[in-house]
Image 1 (cartoon, rainbow, N blue to C red):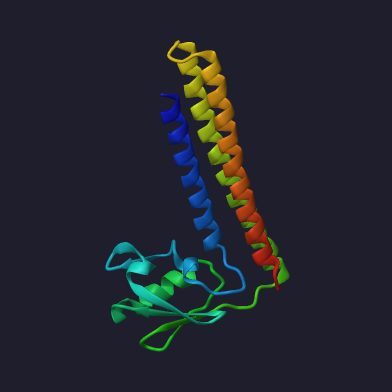
Image 2 (cartoon, one colour):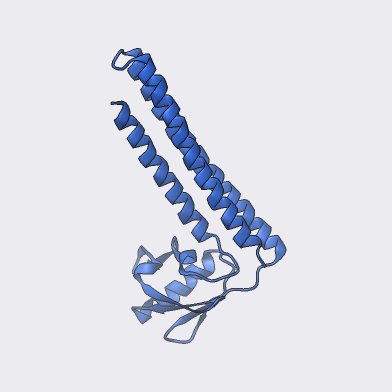
Length: 185
């Protein structure tokens, strides 16, 4: 029962780290990358559809993304979704492709992105801590009910703390790399 609880907690913590990675990928740096459009939904025939399902992406230059819609009739909807996404991009349409050129980031905008990254990292850490709290409550209940001994419960709690620290450190490392990437001019 202890092993199941610890395994479940570690699995959920890894998912929290993955969510943080995806969130960091969505924060743009000076370079253009398709991950910026990952959460973008396009109104396609009345249904919100992820942009990745409607188009392919090319990255010919560091600050340019070319979006090639599979269905040319969806171009206007894709352009509208990009403009409304507040990515700081003004897409241009030549009839067959949509070209998105990233403007150079100002120092102020970089600082805003660093704050966003810090907020996402803190959310991920809170999530990991909530998972730890839930697992710890489960372990304490097992000890209280007499299903496991106090020594085993204490050992499991120490192991839980080690796993929690590992995942919080992972999130801190991801944040440090993203911050360096954002502030690199």
